[in-house]
Length: 212
Image (cartoon, rainbow, N blue to C red; front, side, top):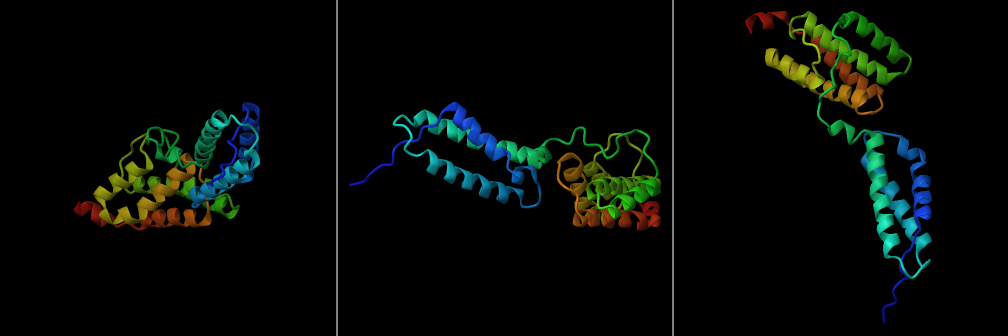
């Protein structure tokens, strides 16, 4: 004979309190390459603990169960939004490399990036170094001056002129977009990818441009 566990019931106030306590955990304010797996593990652990604590409280548990499921979905959405996973999948409108129509020179951005990296501020360093890269390509006439150009557009435009630039520029554009517009943290590894792209921009052969 099978014995069923008593159904789950949870009031609105209890549900709100449980969700608030869960969202207050430090893990949900952090982001990184393994954010999705960390979120899944945290949410599953919370579901398990919550179900154990709420089982058997009331004979009328259907409403409480639906409320709990809804809160779980809300927690996942909030976590992914704060981590930048959802924000990096939106359109690229408004994700321009430069915030001004009159950007500074490549050397200025590069010096700024090196100073920021030396201070351990890799988020700012990624932003400044990629701007140095795009400014360098503009100064070397690989790119034309176009206000509002996004990182991915810079890769596409430069790659059409010098195909060899696509390989170093693509990961750098991804790092820039994730860090600047996706709320991802800057790291030494991500900064290194942008430095590699900037080095490629500095050493691109201008003779290739004449032949193009």
